[in-house]
Amino acid sequence: MAVAPAPRPAIWAVITVFHPDGVPPLLARLAPQVDRIVVVDDGSGPASADVLDRIRTLEHEVIALPENSGIGTALNVGMRHARASGAEMILTFDQDSEVSSTYVAELVSAHRAAAAEGFPAGPVVPEYFADVAQASASGGSSTLLASHAIQSGMLIPVHVLDVVGDMDEDLFIDLVDTDFELRCREAGVPCIVSRGSRLEHSLGARYRVRGPLGAVLPALTLSTPFRYYYRARNRVIVNRRHRHARARLIREGVADRVYFLIALALAEPRRTMWAILRRGAQDGRAGRDGRMPADLAARAAAVTWRAERQPE
Image 1 (tube, rainbow, N blue to C red):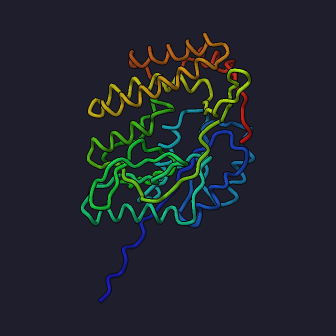
Image 2: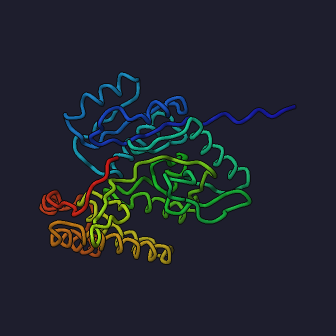
Image 3: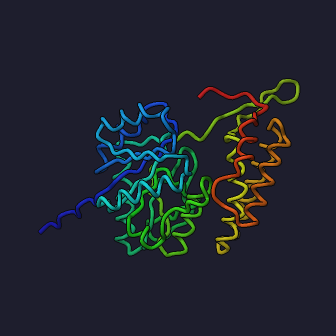
């Protein structure tokens, strides 16, 4: 007698938004693939009230945080709500992500395949995040381990949160997903990859710089200036916290330093960007986390880039 396939677990999607331009297209593509969607607005305020109301009319749940609290807090609020409502698996997304019509089924299938091999799989991520590969090494005959797992598009079985805990809210933003991935590996429920799956995502603003004699150099991705504080600070915190991954984190730290040098070279005023990076590193060494200092945030808001922003 044929064995009936296992029923699909109850899957909720948690989508974080901040000053959304409109209803994210992700919702329409994702809705048929999950049981419920909860949108967490991270303190956009009255300016986004109309958009959030439109999302509610689509019968999705909306949680509006009173102030900007960081990606860790926004995700945790949504995931706690999903768990309390009966979710067995939770998908996390940023507002700029896009998925295929088979995306969720692909990730669930990868998790089941790993379980069938007896592999203690934790979260599942697509093999490609935009054009960034997230696979590292084989964890079994067909199981790929993830490296540099990004939280947008991540499928998290609820039991993993029981073992590992929530996202670290004190990191606020940047490397929150790296810390979570490494904690999963330490706890024996490593992130795995869904082979061939892809998540489309905007990777940030692209800029071009004029070189010698007016030559146009390759496009660069630059973040909002305040993000460099969190990146510099959290790099120190995460590297200290996960010493077992020292070789990997050293490589990532070197890449970050190159990234910081580019930002420093293109920032105006440069001394302000230097102050942002220096304060981030100092606070990381001192173990200070949470929101960046208000005075530094105000200075960061005045930084511009000596580069031409490219149309999206």
